[in-house]
Image 1: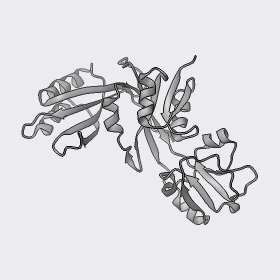
Image 2: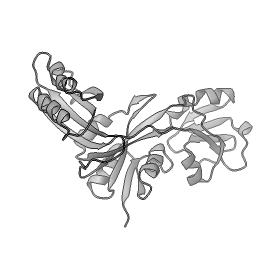
Image 3: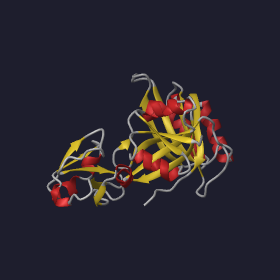
Image 4: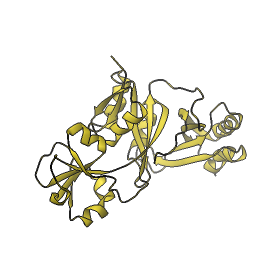
Length: 270
């Protein structure tokens, strides 16, 4: 049996499209929840997981930063997917016949301008492309049209032309090899010690060693307002001397530090 990559959602979802781009040689395995995606890899039913972590319009994907550290998996790659929304309907339908569209809740606001200009109402729905109701279309990826035999009536109808989702690809085993054409990214989580200015001191080593930190986010642990964990991305490999020195300084001011993965930096797709 060939290798599989698990994703959350139905066939034709944007996560599925990300799988076909990043791992075209793998069979895509749809899962109901993010937890199911992670479990599929941990149990060996899939070899890798495709997980969205943030969107340029809507920010961080809910709960994902909590799931990643607890997953037991390792980040081995990343992908930036340009979100292109298509309006589709059963073959033979004309655009002027469409009065209502079904879409995932997050897609409707992203195409509000187009829908308003054409007098189309949006309706949130979990299952999209199986509808054959007259006068009703679907907002989804072009991949969904191919899978469900629908005809695309309008391409790229999103209001924001640079709407992009960042995905992380995770596996059971880490890959610390140097690879890619644009350098390496290292993702890690940490908790600071309970001392004055601990976060400032913990991050000082990255500044003094010239290590670029591209992301730093905080989130509560176990619903507590006093227990905070930080999620960070930096440019570089843990074996790079500046990164190694920065981590040595970070460890002095932290009570917990865990590297989630080191992987090649990707570039946004246009």
